[in-house]
Figure (cartoon, rainbow, N blue to C red):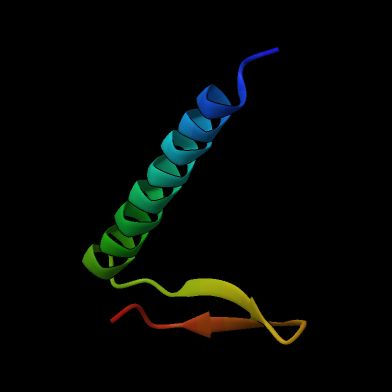
Length: 50
């Protein structure tokens, strides 16, 4: 098992990677002029990326 401070570092790396993927997804959707499909209040909704 890794020391606690190394687990935090791994967590930070994962979160930064997730943020990068999120940004790339939005840019891709803007570029292709396609909708984002998200769930809001237990309903599936199409949203135009801005």
